[in-house]
Image (cartoon, rainbow, N blue to C red; front, top):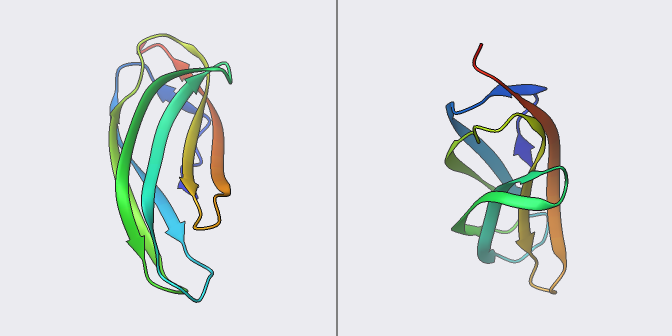
Length: 101
């Protein structure tokens, strides 16, 4: 789950973003978590990944440091992981980037 609830970000600003990885299974999960920004729901403009391991029925909080793109417009955060069964789990958040005024 992406822990971000704002509607807008300022172009070119630097921010830390938290992603909560929750394991609701009775076995440990280990894998990569990716976090990125897509423009207009299509083009990925930034992406990072981090390895993660979560105990059974536990959670980890990952932090990603990103510089917000300079171009204004409609964007979406995408956090994604692949389960042990091969299923993709995604968390999405829509937001706008505005100029620094």
